[in-house]
Image (cartoon, rainbow, N blue to C red; front, side, top):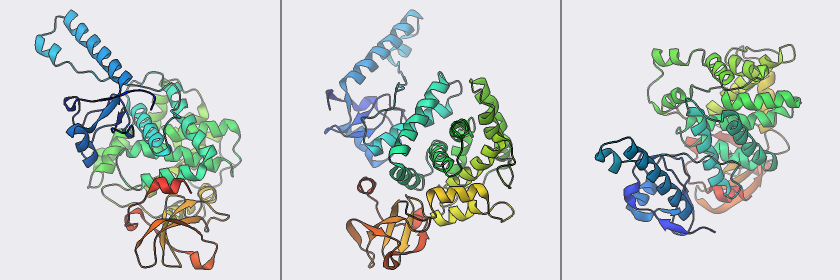
Amino acid sequence: MASELLQLPTRMLRLGMTLPYDVYDATGKLMFARGQVLRDSPLARSLLNGGAWVRAEDTAEYQKALAHRMDTLMHQDAVLADITGAEIRFRFEAEAPRVDLPPREAWADLLMHTHSLLKEAEPVDFLPRLARLREQLLARARTQPDATLLQLIYESGQTYEDYSARHALLTLLLAELVATPLQLPDPLRTALHGAALTMNYGAGPAHDRLAAQAEAASPAQRQQLAAHGERAAQRLQALGVRDPIWLDAVRLHHDAGPGPLASRPPGEQLARLLRRLDIYGAKLAPRRSRAALSGAAAARAVYLDEAQQPDEAGAALIKAVGLYPPGSGVRLASGEVGLVFKRGHSANAPLVAALLGRSGTPLSAPVPRDTRLATHAITASLAPAELRLRVNLDALLKL
């Protein structure tokens, strides 16, 4: 790392705080990205025990900002207790995607910025920041589509934390992948991208609370979420979104019913497509009250419409990502258990990394399997909770 690392005093860290800078271990490996909440975990506890390091320039910026805050309080004749206890939280927003981070850290950085932008009540520079998030994910999706799917689908299935931000990014990725088989023209593709990121704008905190609670949604919560598409469209328009197709897709994404896409107005076409992407991503993610579904079960949920008929939008999605998408677990005819890491030549024959041998013993390294072969054919799609092993995602991303 080019910049000097300085050890951070533990008094400057506490559980629940939003980190104002990147935090590293003593070797220079990124542990937490700035803007992340320091939740209680063994890793967070190790930080509190004195193992945190920061870039020198970040610390200098922090001290400068803190000094400015204290000077302001002094000029306002604040009481001494307020001045000596002054604390600052300031946000670092990157002007361009951070290309210096490895895939896992880059994903955490992107997730953090998405969470920050979508939860702000009065965001500054909303549209430019939204455009940067979109381009950062799409750049990875276009160069490494399977690796990006692997990472987002696998990690979305592991936790209900940051549900709304993870869901927005996964929906954006799915929107990009499904736009090609549907031959969406560029203006509609761009509108779909924007709607995918913002369809739940303003309702993110409510969705996050629902994901984290053990009980079913209360009548008050259901009322809060009712017509959230209309409210999101109104907020987006107030923030400068002028594309009527984008706004219609957000407004109608819970109201566009089944049926062919071609006969609909453009905004309703995208709304119907967005609804199927929304359902698919939600089925792949757990909540505290329910487990995530397997890849095949999520595919079945979107392939058939509300009348249990084949759905054009759902079929296009399955064609794009496969019946067993990257990031989902499977059992093979050989008895091995693994994780899909790449889409195959057909929707039901992806490439799988075997992780458990037929005896149930973890393999020393992931072993690629071609499921077109009868000996390695997929016999079952596994939900995330059924994949009872520690997955080395970094190793899979190198395959």
